[in-house]
Image 1 (cartoon, helix red, strand yellow):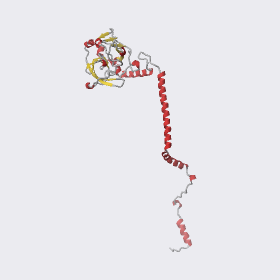
Image 2: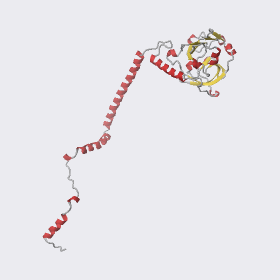
Image 3: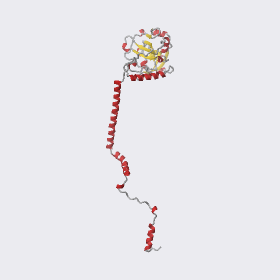
Image 4: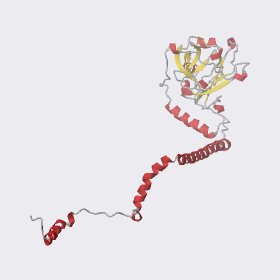
Length: 311
């Protein structure tokens, strides 16, 4: 091509170079002024910067924690006041039991005891045994007498059986031994409502063998046992027991503990061992056994404890 092109030819070349399809041309975006910036963009910028502001402001974080702490303290105070007020109202206004069983426990609590008793008696079976343990695990339990340990003259001890069809009977320890009840030895766990327990080996006679020799009259539902040694009136004690529990094969009239005769600390000369009930029912130094159609008196039930006291 001639480098010295004429003027009309140069114009034609320029037109050819600039004649580009507009549809293929890149889009040109004009700058947007700050005034025309979208609101959403501003919000996004604020949201992104908030964590940096919170992290950067320790004083604001401390102020927020202080507000939360005050709120939690006020809420805890309101809840505590409600609980204390409820307990106060219950103690002041809830009806108190005034029955033969007890006269100090709230009626609502006694009703709870009785519901538990109805469930326990429904589930009770003479075929369900309390756990037994190897003899070598036996230990000496606590004395735990309520009050002074009575030390009466054991040679003068007698057992009175009341409620028999023919009247009362009085027996000495020699009389009981002469009846030749089968000797039983069992290593069971004595559990106290205070939270302690002890595995103990007991020896004696089954209470149900005693009851077969001295049968209760028709209509008997309970057995009362009392400990009333002369000269130790402050230590007198009494329990009420349901008849099925007394007839359980593990319920014993014990005369020995851990291979030796009972001593005064543990209820000599005769005590009850009933491993499917708490220790409060395991009366020591028995002097009276009586049959009854209704619930007899019970020392701890009169002081608000569960009458049944089952395990």
